[in-house]
Length: 77
Image 1 (cartoon, rainbow, N blue to C red):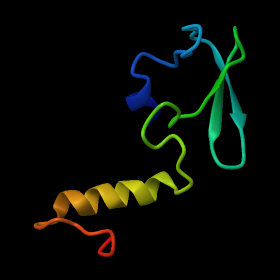
Image 2: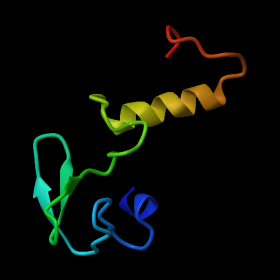
Image 3: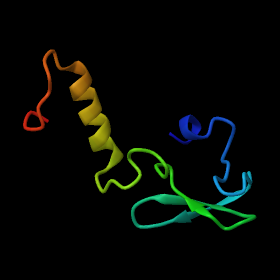
């Protein structure tokens, strides 16, 4: 996932810095820029940025919707 998000390595959204440190939190790993101290997660700035569900649950839902022959209802998920 990290390779897909940052193919050329981590880049800070605020200062474009490349060097970072890892902060292990309760829910996610956070990447902290060493030059400006801005913190980012893997999902920050994406449609999944504020979700409380695990990413595996979302990926399963995306798969089920993609494989459905008819429109998938929320009840069927």
